[in-house]
Image (cartoon, rainbow, N blue to C red):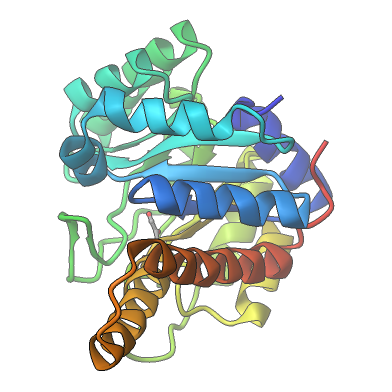
Amino acid sequence: MPVVPLKEVLDRAFAERYGVAAINVVNDLTIEAVLAAAVEEDSPVILQTSVKTVRSYGRDQLHGVFRSLVRDVPVPVVLHLDHCPERSVITDCLEGGWNSVLFDAHELDVAENLRQTTEVVAEARRHGAHVEGEIEGIQGVEDGVGSDDAPAVQSLEVAVDFIRRTGVDCFAPAIGNAHGQYTAAPRLDHQRVSDLVEATGIPMALHGGTGLSAEQFRDLVARGCAKVNISTALKESFMRSGLEFLRQAEEKGKWDPPSLFRHQRAAVVEMAREHIRIFGSAGRAW
Ligand code: 13P
C-alpha cells in the first residue's frame, strides 16, 4: 500500500472535504515520527522535503531512508518535493522516486510559468507522478526559497486559466497566508479558495499552516484545501524538544543520545497527530 499517487490521496480528501497533512520532514527521525503519527491516527499523509533537505541529505540517501521507513507502513503515503524553482531538481527527484512535486515558478511571468509548468506536468506523468502549481509567491522564506514581501496576487481569471491549461493536480493560491510563525493574526481570503475550487474543480494546497487556528483550518478544508502544509511546527517541535532535553542533560551531566531522540520523536509525533486530527483525516486511511 504505502506509496500512493498524490491525486488519489487528494481526490478522496477533496470529495469528502477533509485535509491531508503535508509535513516537511528533515531527517530519518522526523520521517519515522510523522509516519508513526499517521499510523496512530489511521490517516493518509504527505511527506514533503524542501530542496535544501534534498541537497543537504543527498537525493538517494534521503530516498533510501524514506523507502526503508515506509515499507511496512499500513497507511497511504505520498513523497512530495516542496517549492522547487529548479527544473533540474524536479527531474532529479522524479527520477529518484518522489511521486509529487511543487514546481514553484512564481518568479517567472505567468506565461512562461504556464509554459514550463505544462512541461513539468508532462514529465511527471511519464513517471506516474503529480504536480502542484503556483503563480504567486507565498509570503515568508521557507528553507531558503521565497521572500518576506507580500506577493502580488493574480486575478481569478489568470489563475483559472493557468490551472486549466497546465493540467496541474492541485494549486497553491496566495490568500494572505505566510510561511513561518505569523507575527500578526492573518487575514485570509477564504472566498478566493471557494472561487478557485468552483471554477476549476481541483483541490487547493494551503501553505503556511503553522499558526493557523483550528477554526481557520476547518473552514479552508471545507472550501477545498485538501493538502495542508506544515513545516515550521515540525522544525520547532523537533528543535525545542531537543533544546529542552539538552538543557536537562547538561544539568544532570547525563548524555544519552537515544533518550534525546525519544524525546524529540514524542514531540514530533504529538505535533503531527494534533494537526491530522484537526484536518479531519484521522480514520480515513484505506
Ligand atoms: P509553515 O512553515 O508556515 O508551516 O508553512 C509550511 C509550508 O507551506 C511549506 O510549503
